Amino acid sequence: MKFKKILKIFGAFTTFFGGLTLVNKAIFKLAKHEDADFKIGEYFEWKYGNVHYKKSGTGKPIVLLHSLTIGGSHCEFRKNIEALSQKYTVYAVDLPGYGYSDKPKITYTAFTYASFINDFISQIVGQPSMVIASNGSGMFATIAAKLFSQNITHLTLISPNGISDKMAENSDFYYRTMLELPLHGTTVYNYFSSRKIIKEFLLTDGFYAPENVDKTAIDTFYYPAHGTNSNVRYSYASYATKYMNMDINGYFQSLTMPIRIIWGEELTINPIENMDILKKLQPAAEFYIFENTKMFPHYENCDEFNSIIIN
Image (cartoon, rainbow, N blue to C red; front, side):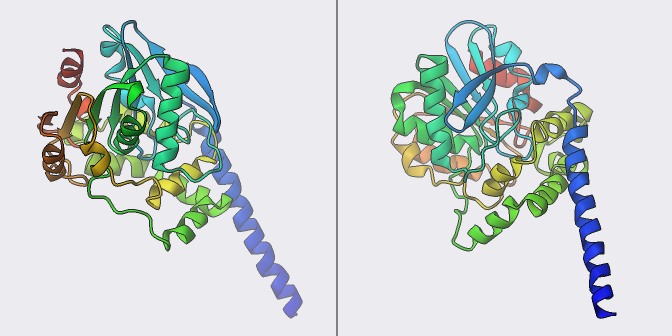
């Protein structure tokens, strides 16, 4: 009797976890992008897989680096690429582990991405470039600008992280490992990358104006969040456990190229007070405060943002 009971329990667990695996696979399969243009682009064969990017325009080069939130991709700059390409050659990148780029099974760190930025500019752009980095990618761009200054002519940071953020601790290793597990990690990721949670994030932290959180905005993050396969859990695991974080204050203070800082005045998870810290470190830099915006001033007030970059 006990043996039969154990078999029933085992069968129930097998059915449950098997069903959950099928659901996870179905979510990625069904998340087809309605705008096929987002998938169109070129690929950089980097040491950690193929990296998707879109190139447009003519003139001096600009490399656009998106934020690290779930669903971060070049699509974040959908309201900027066309305008900027009227004057510049624009390279809008899906960072490794994001969007339509490959998702290698590695630990993603700030130095991994700083190395990528340098390699991309050296091998694809082929000349020193302006870099525009949004939120978390501002950490990577700052480190790259310090370590590989010969490749970055100007640096524009949109509410960069790495000023007062917490770093990964020893205890975060276990949590990261759990998030990398196929079933557990993919299930957690699919929950946080659902339309419902993405909408809540945009309403709470992403955008200031609720009317901006429309289907287009949600699609901008939802579809790239499922751009390739469930291996995206590896970059998410590093992001969620702060393995991507880096204190950039010392790097930022030592930069010598022209710097521009743009901040959404209503941003709460990375408050505008952090901009004051950067002002003390680089008083000669240009600082812009965008009213009635949060994490994505380049999306919510694209006209003003594009004007600043172009002029």
